[in-house]
Length: 119
View 1 (cartoon, rainbow, N blue to C red):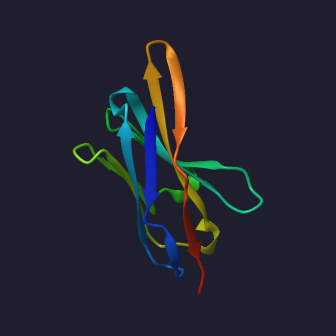
View 2: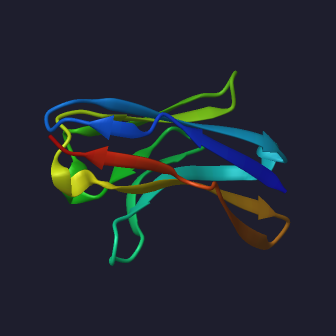
């Protein structure tokens, strides 16, 4: 199992920035990818960005150029740097870890951290 704890959310004015953190613990050696998802009120959860064990990253088109996903292997932590925040970025942001154990695949989720963009 893997435990994920997010932090760094908050209330920010439009144009501001935030850095979200996701600390992983447990069976982290089985993690092959981590990512950030978000869910706005009344909407489905959507993928924001992912980073693979080899460092490759992927972003949804709507955040390219403003969001950067990175990781610190020594701290078992994944970050999401968000610049130029917009009101439409308001959502609950979830950290996700994908594990492979033998031939089985698993998804783990954190509890989420709220990001609210408002003046």
